[in-house]
View 1 (tube, rainbow, N blue to C red):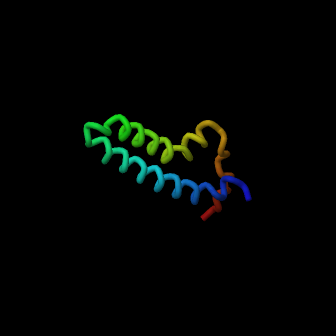
View 2: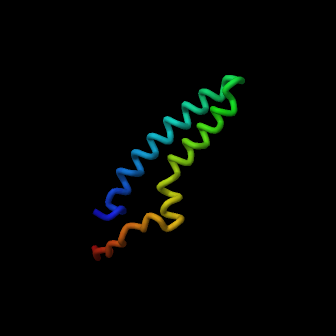
View 3: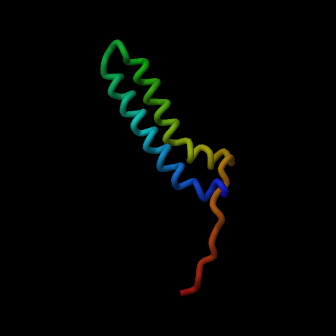
Length: 72
């Protein structure tokens, strides 16, 4: 199965995982003694959530094939 067929599912999973990771990191960053760890975790969460887009921009994940428009 080509990767572009799995991209919608992969995107949903990575967006959800990245969002949760980012929110946990931002919650941890509110405490002064865990500020750096929380900021790092929030940054990692952002990178997880944005990884499908970065993969397409880098050319690792090919774009889906174009479908011809049917005349109406």
